Amino acid sequence: RTISVRSLTRAQTTIKDFVQSYFVLYNLKPIDFLRHFPILIFVEGTIYELDELNEVQASKGSTAEAHDFRKIWSAMVEVLKHKGLYDNKVESELLKGLRYWSEERRICNILLKKGASWDLK
Image (cartoon, rainbow, N blue to C red; front, side):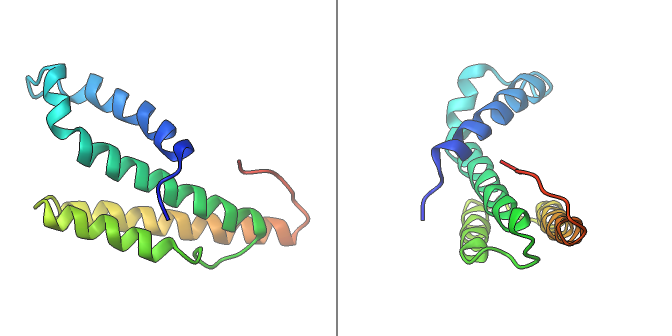
């Protein structure tokens, strides 16, 4: 499985905001972005891909993670570790994301059981 074009497109907006907001704080120039581009787009694209998978599950009323979810998640974590970018703070933030997605599925499940219907896409 690869990261979808839709996920990469969604990541592009976030990365743009990130660069415009934070690079100036660290006195980095736009050209410095290219040095960090691969990992930034990989992580953000992967997060959006996971979000896409989660939204499909939530729209079905499923409380379970999608079949490929953990495989994609683990690949992202391994890349971060390999690059020396995975520490307790990163782990904590990523775990917050897992909890958020789990709660999103749980709430959607409850709402669907009560007759709600919507398209999360």
